[in-house]
Image 1 (cartoon, rainbow, N blue to C red):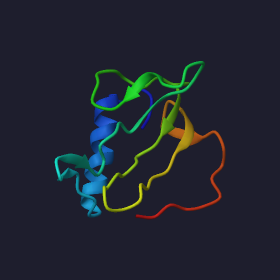
Image 2: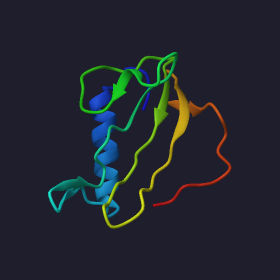
Image 3: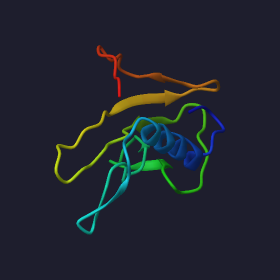
Image 4: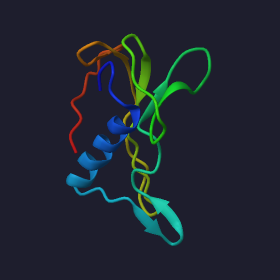
Length: 105
């Protein structure tokens, strides 16, 4: 995730990494489960703003403030995921609020 990156490509990369680590997205009992939401979205005055880091077109710009929330949803298990707030930079991103824990899949 960095300035100039296609939002859909960031979303697809997250989906591939979750699948690589064994988290499948599938239909269970007629309902989708797994990584079924977008990877993130912009933050500002509204709850959800551009850029939409999902399947939609668009590119990240330096200075975008975004959520990064790759949630996993399975009907028989509790929802899991993380939600962080980050700012997009020319070479990557940085947390707006430092995270005290290391996340591992």
